Image (tube, rainbow, N blue to C red; front, top):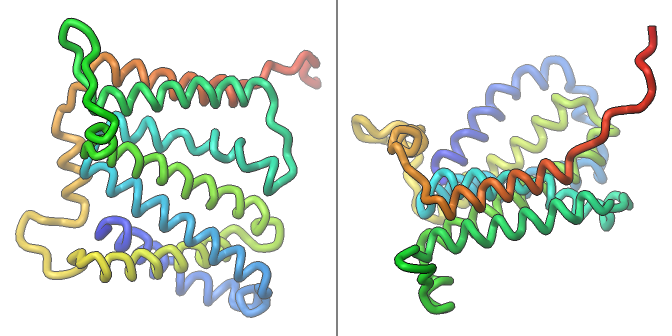
Length: 239
């Protein structure tokens, strides 16, 4: 939570003088609708950072990163409802493949392979720490999807810098509140305890994911590739 809150707070502070100097007029005429959309997008972005970064505390980097990459598939699911876009067969197939991969990742974080797959009871499975991290990563993907979907609407009316400033500021606001409520320490770090220590620790832990988790991650990424693949144009390039 500390990492998420400070990351967005610093980004907002860096953007503030630039936006006030060059986009003050646009900022004063954003409009109620755009303010509300920016507030919603910032809230979803806060959800993304808070849940995804927190997931690294409970599950492996491999599981967390693979599951948060399902963001494009959640965008595809909600696009028909919010943007009136249709979901084709390839997107649906990719979604199913990624769901299967996500289930395998969750199983790999709670089950073991000893003369066959051995899994705990449903209650124990749900309460497992790694599965909790996997769910946080999925919520992180949902938050990013909401941020992207709303952004596609609001960027039609605002310059990119103004949009980013409003969204980052909103996200920083929510994350600072969440950090305060959760008791996260934002200042007075002891020696050797920088904000990025958690991320660097995971990078250098030399985790070796089991085969089942690798299979799940491959399926997740394969599903995304299937959904995003477009055939090359049959038209000849212009001269």
